[in-house]
Image 1: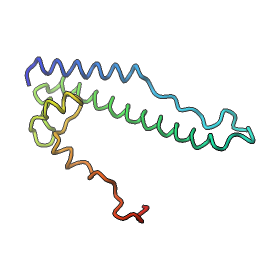
Image 2: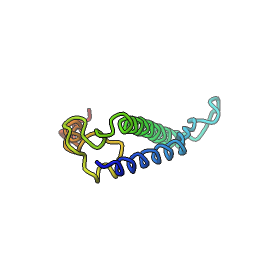
Image 3: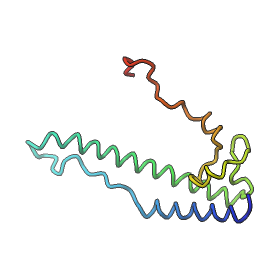
Image 4: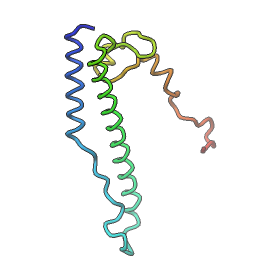
Length: 129
């Protein structure tokens, strides 16, 4: 990877970091405005819980991506020649993959080997565990 390409990826990482920090956390609204209130709308409670779950999930995902961006920036700073190489097999990560996610450190093959197979753990329709 050329120094110009590394500089471009560094800028992409810095822009992504700034964007994620500017977004901030998604506010998680309380389930009830007044915990002592009686006779509140029971249909609103599941919707509030679902909104809390979605907001919490997005906040966790954002935190993970920020951490990965920081690691990628540190890799660019400390070992620039290693940026763009898979940390497991030392093969180049595809340019397309780096364009989409400049913070990745694994090639597609190594990432697939690490991730569980898609589709979930259910084997049968009656397998609810």
